[in-house]
Length: 293
Image: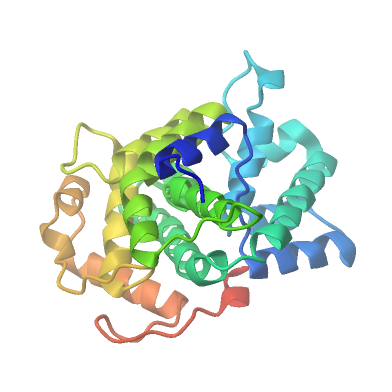
């Protein structure tokens, strides 16, 4: 057991660039099928990447690397694949999924990852749905990606925790400690990753703004993801369930000008897509493979 503070261990891991981000097992399995037994296409890759925060993060990290310094920032999956090419996209996916196999051999990730993935994908689908419903079709894909990546700090922290909990100097982390650190540090760690990996500025603003106490300024993308996030919490998609939330009264809903009927339809969309029972009750796991469409 080390006598260093846990936060020091976390930032030391970030400093040396040894963060292992875990891909969801179902996404990794689909990636293996696509790469090994099918003829990969840009559309197939795009669907795969749009379903997993870690794959999306890896793609944008590659497409906005220092090698492309001075060129416009890439903000869509299609642009990223065009910049690095399909062969490099395939290599990036394969290398990223390889880390998933190592990451999921520990104790924490198999328990924490499924609800985190549900929540991240729910926010992505929700932010896209809200953008289209509110008349911002031009922002739909960016909203999807911003929702997918808004909690990337939690993915990184879980990967770090799993590394700290393995090896000769393994550290045992109580569930309550894990929850507290995830809640209090994930925004800061997420912002660190977006800077270190040259992720798009639009996504960094969402990472930094999705948990602010009040809605600040006129950040449309941030507002879409914040409302999507609240909707996921209301239906119990992820770790936190708050069925008492009244979405039409939120500052986000009022800023977007979306009414009660539309927000009720939004909740139904989430419940249907993830096969949830009514808010407030226990829910089953989503049909993961059914999300690849």
